[in-house]
Image (cartoon, rainbow, N blue to C red; front, side, top):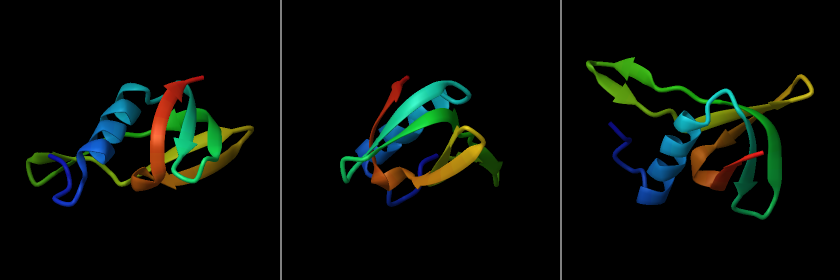
Length: 78
């Protein structure tokens, strides 16, 4: 179940993040910057449904960067 205010693009980003969880990725941000590292993203079961968090984490060289899903323009394997 997606958040009531998710755009279709944001839900697609969340679905892609879930599919690539635990892999090396390049995350492109809306402002043109990129974040590269290992992606961590998982859904949460709440009230009998599945909730997609609004943040994902990319870890590179022991430094974790948390990114809001509405700031992501694309996620690719990297």
